[in-house]
Length: 359
Image 1 (tube, rainbow, N blue to C red):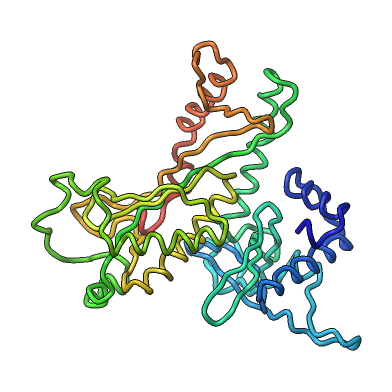
Image 2 (cartoon, rainbow, N blue to C red):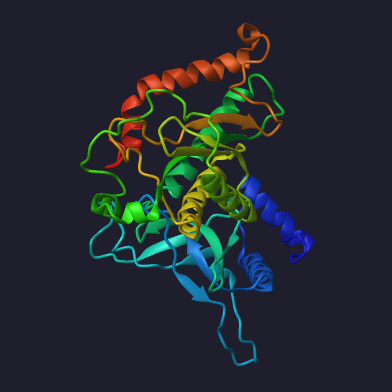
């Protein structure tokens, strides 16, 4: 974006990303025009507000840049289209908080998560990460509550940090989110109606050999699986997803990949993107990837181990004990309060991750 924006607007955009500064309409128009120019130079013909409704997956509605006008221009992408869109909210789950007669929902641009171009054989689309809210302002997605939580955490953490270091003005949460998965040959998958319909087995018999010998974990990766891993890792890198690790997991035909730590909002977006990529790339290799938490009885399920921490704008890891943890008062303050928060709010933490597949 530095190549397509004036220095002044670029610096304002950086302030918006880092400090949450407001963007005025003129600057939004310049940013939208720059994003359109960049995306079309990459071959994109459409754009979409990419959001995460309460379905466990992502959603998108594509609009074309094609918009003829009287001055002879045939493409347009205004700041108003970048900042806000109005998809129908009536067909998404909402937990009962949306008024039935208010069908409208709104997607609003999240500048803190970079836009990206999704490529398929048929074409390319500019994807703009957004929050999804109702007509009356209730959150209808997972991103909006996360951003609110991060803002609250930042304020509370900075207040504590100020007792130890006056130079700290911002605290971010970092996350390295693992992704475990099973691979099944596509022909075998299609032969099982329960797998096709639900993504998990509903009946069957225990395998003669499961994970009893503990010989699959960190074992030699099968050649066909290795080819799949390399393929989806390359696709992930094109989208800026910093995958670092791959290996066999504990259960037969179970594997794992893990990224480098990122700011938590971006890490969540990247994990959603990664799961979508894994499913698409699996078809190229005649695989079906199972992302269900417990697709088989009697062996390990698949998890997303959340390795997280709190990082200050001065580079301090607030949950790193250091070489002398007993004398590290800042670490002890955050460590003790984290344990206390988990103890006092365990019911809310469990409720926040409860789902049909994660019971």
